[in-house]
Length: 122
Length: 418
Image (cartoon, rainbow over all chains, first blue to last red; front, side, top):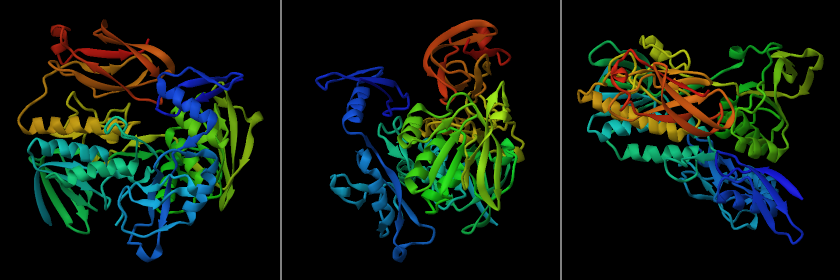
């Protein structure tokens, strides 16, 4: 069984072909570097993506012109749980001020992955 | 009128403006950034996705994080930031040059500067530029405007969108809208291949099952008051085949149809533009036809990676500082775009050093050979990989060893991909 995929690790975007043999071992071809193999293995077993989003500031602390605080998951997040994560982030309100790197949501959905602010907002 | 005076003034406080200002200041000259927004960072503030800084910081950052790193450097430097200040005019012929600007803080201000660096960034092409016929309903946005509305203002532009153009901005917004609760029905691209990076096609379209229609023109936008759909048709020999036209229902249209360097100020100041880039025509030291006026970043030519825009701006700042110290560029060959090269920037190379020339290919090839010909004679050939129109490339040009011909300002160096 062979699967084609595009590696998203860097802007080059190598076309990967991934074969799984009877014992479950993965063989990757088409990768331009070792990171492609890491990506392909993760993609086959447990696809993850870094999620970037904007969280709404709490009305009580909203300064003029500061409505949304951009944020990201500190590491790649399990892909199938992203819609659930987004729902949490949409409902979330954050107090201001906030500094880049401050956590907005700790241990999101019990994954151990924090969502942190990517902009300092007064 | 407030009167201010600096060695150098930088118009624009985005990635390029900040980078150029830091280089000028590091060389010991007084420098001011005139930025129309309240905060520094330019478009980066709304680019909340990651992929920035891989080259500049060796880390994968989001746009705001990249901007903040530079803003922190600015705060720690001697650069004066005039924010909320819009430059209304530039007199590039006066000595020193004069910028007139307005801001709530300064009122009307006249800034005198011996050197000026233009770093105004770029604008998006809109529906009028690409002339999509049909109705004129509400709900048509350029992708960047939609990005700002979603990411910074917290609005959803609609519930069901079609995105016209598969450049990176359109692809990124396909993902952003999908994550934000607006369904993306399709991305429609007029070329036979996507304009953006393959990685973005994968993580912004494939991940969401969003169809990409290639070689398809958008023939009409439909709607009474509000967008109700778009009509698209596949291209046949370059023209839309209306017999195969189809309608896609939607309430929102995003246009990702190209960026144009912002040069209203340059035109007003009488600075000659390069018709191939839409930015100023510059010499080997990124100086325009106006002595002591330099250009860099997206205002000079549209970059794909902010890292390269910042790097180019750093050089522009260094060149401006050198100019302020009395250094002048030596004459050198004019650089011309040859076969399969859309444009080159800057337009001249200087003998005695390595020159970094940026260019955009017109072809899609996994491997290609770049040929440099001086007055028709091959002087250098360079192998390049991953050649595609979506990615700007660079080549280092060193006229050493080309002989006396290279020292003449009359000679022409052509860069081509045969």
